[in-house]
Length: 314
View: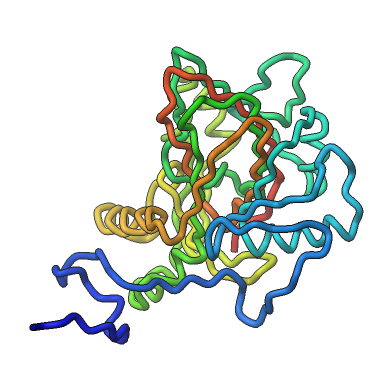
C-alpha cells in the first residue's frame, strides 16, 4: 500500500497544477519582528484569537484615562498583534475620541460627514438600516489615497445584527513574508498609484468630483511599505484605492496587482471578529487590511469610527 510522506521538506508546493499559484502546506507565520522577544503583559490580560493577528484585551476600562505605563504596554500589544479587541465598553463618543487621541491627531474623513450637527467631525458613523446593506465588503486599508494614510482606526459597534456583520482583518506583513522570492524582487522598488475616485466618485456631483480631485490628487506609495515602528515590510496595495503600477504597461501592472490583492484572502493571515454591542476594534492600518462582511441585510448594524493621522509611507 502506498503511503503519503509526512516529510514537510517538500512544502509549500503547487497543488496538483504546477502553473497555478495555489499552494498547500505550512505558511511562514511570524507575529514579532526579528530580534524581538516575547514578553508578558502586566496591566491587562490578553486572549489571542489567532497565532499572529488579533487579540482580545481583558481588564481595561476605556471609559477612564489610561496611565502612561498602561498606554505604553497597550501600544506594544497593538504593534505585536496588529488588531486589538475590547468587549463590554459602554463608552460615549467623547470617550471614544479621547482614547483614539492617545495615539495621535485625528483625521476628518473628506467624504463621510457627521451624522448630526452635534456629532464631532472626527467621528465617522456607519449606519446600515433595513433598506441598505453594508458596502465595505472588499479588502482594503483606510484612506490610502491620502499622502499620509491613517495610522490606525478605532471602531465601536453601537447596534449589531442578531447574526452576521463580522469584520475580518488580514496581516499584510505575513502576506509579504510568504511571497515567492521572485515576486519580492520584482516589487521591491515599485510604486503604485492610489486614488479615491473608484470608491467615492459615485457619491459626488461632477463639479464636486473635480474639486475633490484637486484637493486629493492621486498619490504614489511604495508597493512594499516599511512599518515605521516595527521595521517589518508589509504589502501596501489594496483593491479599493490602488489603480495601477507606476512604470508598468497596464495589462502587466493589473495582472501583478490582482495577484497581490489576492494575498489578503489567505485564511492563515486573517482574524475574524464577531461583534457584540459595545465591542471595540483598534487596528494598525499600516500593517493590515480589513473586510466588513455584508451578510446581515435587512438587519441593522451601526458603528462609529475615529482614525488617527499617519505618516507618508516609505
